[in-house]
Image (cartoon, rainbow, N blue to C red; front, side, top):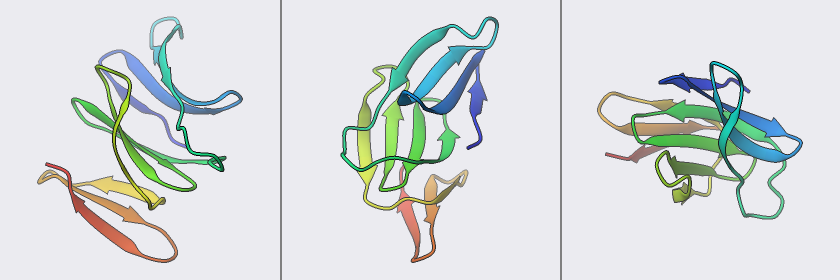
Length: 104
């Protein structure tokens, strides 16, 4: 689980409690957190950060969390390794498939 960083904030998955945390770089203070609401999600995948969204992969799905509202604004029922191109294509790779989604 690799954290993401931008603008003095570190975004990192936590297993106990199960949530993604946004913490201040300076002192580690919790600024906000997000928890997926689907039963059975027990493992974190990767994080990909943009100017306004945090893409989060769990063991069951991939979510886009709005950095302003801290709510999931989009989800896709595939989990795996994430990559985002400059042209706005989000790739989700797992052992079953490679999914490409235009998120722009």
